[in-house]
Image (cartoon, rainbow, N blue to C red; front, side, top):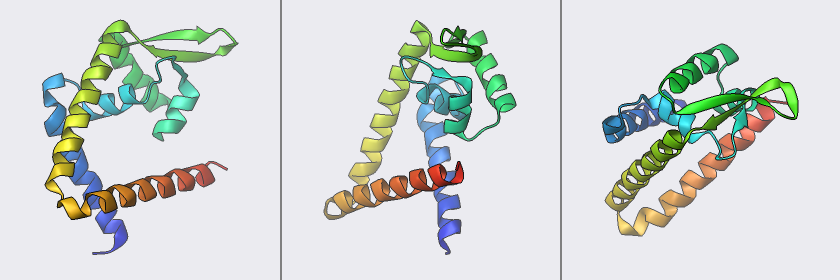
Length: 142
């Protein structure tokens, strides 16, 4: 199997596992990813759309659902009235904490299914893959 095919299959499998692991939260995977991408002090919409790799209209639609569900709020940026800051509500912060617990448990369960002698190597490979992807994304935005 070629590397691109492996990445695609890895993404499909990981999404499927995430959906299964977090189904009790009653939110979609894109909502989970979005909630997990909002720092505690908030983030402007442009930075958030770049972080997630989605266009503004897609992000606006996703944010609208989270606003209706009282998970996030939008406010004008006090430093730049043209931009909007997205912040988690108190309920959103609690939901974020639940998401983190579910993901940590999911990660721990998977990690412990890896043979002990391979665990650190797998962690290092995933770290290096993440680093490589992050650098690639930065170079794409130049």
